[in-house]
Image (cartoon, rainbow, N blue to C red; front, side, top):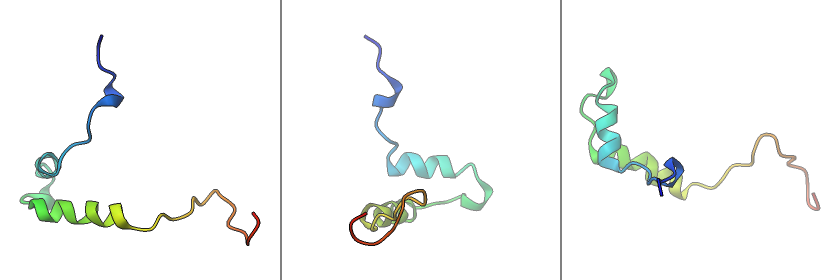
Length: 59
């Protein structure tokens, strides 16, 4: 049975750093430089969807 492409794991920090190297402004990213924003997003408070109503209590 073939694997569904949506079942694949997300790329790791090393793979992301490799992908960034093709961009001129990111020639030598470190693993720490790549991992920092990922860690920040993992612990950031979720923001409400702009399409949702953000009314008061009871909504």
